[in-house]
Image (tube, rainbow, N blue to C red; front, side):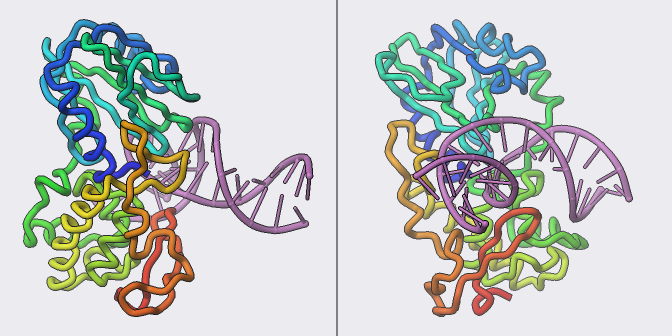
Length: 276
DNA sequence: AACGATCCCTGTTGGC
DNA sequence: TGCCAACAGGGATCGT
């Protein structure tokens, strides 16, 4: 599933092509993909003729500031793939959005489950949307150890649920939350407020190395349906995962079995020998 | 306010 | 072999 490393990999592919580019033609094929605009038809209307200033990212959201006080926002949901292709490239099933640049490149969103979206919002709309409540980016704005600990004090929810909460820190999803907690040696079921300072510090200092490793390998491609890079290649991090999806396999650190359980209504993988 | 449950959606998987 | 229910999950929303 696209999490911070996958979205960052997409961002790095898009930035050199889209930064400074003018959008010439836009098609929104699926109204659900435009649902974050009050009127989905505003997405193509607002985007055509605009120039992209830069390609930015907070958490799992891509933010592309435009001229005229507008921002182009893209989220991949769970099955969204961004393609950067020539207009002659055959169209894949579930292509719900296409934007063509004046240089003749196309940005397409392919999204079978339609959990992703494309929005074009005014500064005013952005300010009043839930996007304004997004927490600091887990890679580039991670709070220091004491500030991170303060976010957890008094919280009874499992630490994994808190790591998944994009209001606290933005970018971790189901895969990388499990990987971070394994690296930190903390049981995902532990209430956030029950962790001692060394455990809090261990989690905090595990976040960026795990995310950086994911980015270095181009993200995690689970299967054909899921995430691919904009040029169609698969990310390589799957083979590096320590716990996610490895139920029954031996822990790479202690050799004990990786177990699957459910935390916060999500599949959760851990090594009970390494994590407490 | 915090927290857990539910819903959205469709390709894939697994049980019978 | 074929069918169909269960499953996957990011984020919004709702009830407690």
